[in-house]
Image (tube, rainbow, N blue to C red; front, side, top):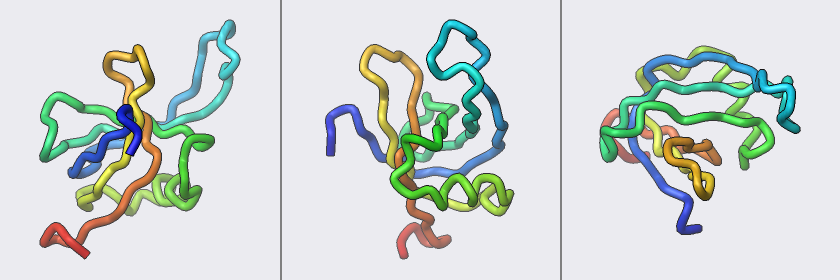
Length: 102
């Protein structure tokens, strides 16, 4: 795994669709999800960002839109952008059953 990639276990508490509003950004107007998370193995991280272009599995975007994800447990594979202090981007996830494994 890339040294900037991390795996976290936890649940999605809330989601919010957002958009890049900075007109100077090359990503201006691009939509992304803000997932408020409760992680079991890192209590400091409260949010994971989801950008469609960074997902390894595009079904994740559809799953987030469907609303059937709150209170399910996941292993979140994320990428922390070099130099970014608090920004974790979702790359992939794996849903866990209630006992923590598949």
